[in-house]
Figure (cartoon, rainbow, N blue to C red):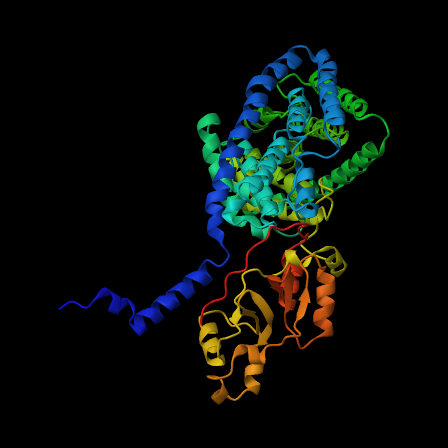
Length: 593
């Protein structure tokens, strides 16, 4: 006769095994990572479509005919670029709240200071200004609008996808993941997007919290873009062989040179940029002046050399020319210097984009010239790759991104070790000088900042409560199913009586546990604060009452969460800038004994 199913399921050993399985699964998935498997792909698809559209507009429809026209009629470079910059300047001055805040800088600033909240209204004007800046010939590329557009999508997605258990601090994670998706799409380089998102906010740290969503969003964004624009490496070149130990030494020297060059350039750029921002001249006038100077750089170069290179615009075609065609070292050096100057005039006055590709290209020209004239190498492409990685690492404080970017976009995986050496040395030599004024050295919070942080932002909301009517024996059995904590909030129905401390069990004989209730040993004078109380005040209370390990966060006689010293320490360790608002998260109902 078969055993009834109910008897099997109710067997003590089966129930104990099921309880252990649930406990293991709860511990395994306690970070609620599975939400990113839903949220991140949505961001990836949206970013992939948007960036593919921006790339098609600039790279396929605007820049190719503009470049041909400039090369055929060099005299029109100056008025052409000045006109594009005038349009961008007028858009930024009259259609955005701050004409000097845009692109990568805005995303980094929002991550650190606004918890990923990016203003919606100027989104389209800023994209149009970026198209005008780059499409007219400004020395910049698509990484600026791509990072900004992807980051904006991540920030907006948080508003519409909050039903997937998103917390307020998840918004800045989504901001970075969206930026990663934008980077992945524009450069056809998903790994670059992931690594750049982690390195972008800091000079000497990583945004570890964004790893999984950035990974998923970048891969999905790349998969969305590939059928539309292709999946081949953006700046591919064929390697002709390996490298020797001597090449590693030369790579180290090239990294040193590039590191010093980027240090000087970034300091100069930041001072020039600060001067332009502080100037009371109308923004559109500054942009026109920058456009004229950018055009002069292009005109000077094509007056000297007529072999296809022009240090203007997104310059994707120039990367291929440097890598695949022969040029004299003098020409390459002149091109690199004028490219840097054109970038200074384009972005320093407020042009809407970033210097990622200009640095990449300049490093390639300097590296190729170094390989030809100093090393006399038969593989100038090796030194081009090292120069590219070194310039990016020194200028953007993103050494891992630099190496991965060079490998993914050029197909030069055989040069991984030399590029690592060059990037590491350039990163170290260039110190803390960076193109971004909003990058922080590392993730930190000063104690003084706790005064500005409400308790609701660091409290625990996943609370394991104790029932007031449960006996101590029942309570001990209950907590055996959960992670042990030093204290527990005590519920009597929906009312919170206080806190019960595990330490108090040592003062009560075990013989009394079956008859003594939790309410009889509760600390009714437990510390209580409101959710809007500052963390600084909560910390003061905990230090003043050192025997109490927990604060109850109460609002309208309802438990909103709990706060311990560990929560405050974790906040100091893991969050460089706290959220300013938080969604209400319900406290789970008391577990039945």
